[in-house]
Length: 159
Image (cartoon, rainbow, N blue to C red):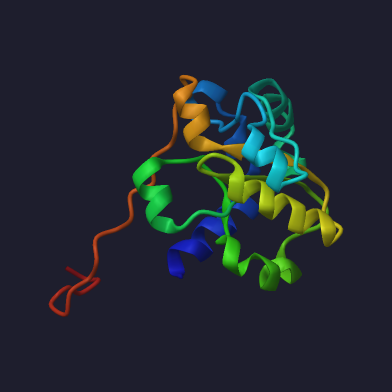
């Protein structure tokens, strides 16, 4: 929970992190809409060019990754994002800012498409959905998130 909160705060308070070179930043984008995504979601699957254009104006953008923390740490993702798992998204809409354009992220954009549809139905401006694995398969670089080691009973913060 604490890691999710930190990531959420970073996403809201550090939009300048998006200004990095997109090849280094691990910008996730699908190259086309797959048939299964098109059937299950109305969300637009963003191309790499579309996502790069959105990331060029980070002050107007919010990236919401709907994957589990273990997926993010094992697969990788974007350098700054708000992590709200898909099952918690509807009850979390009250604290998601409406003043930004939203991009939803999952592994292959299926859950991201579902999240985009939900947020659109709640009045949010959603640019589309992206899949990080699809992006990586197309040659993109992902940012790896390494969780801190678990504390044991003998570990104290003062060493």
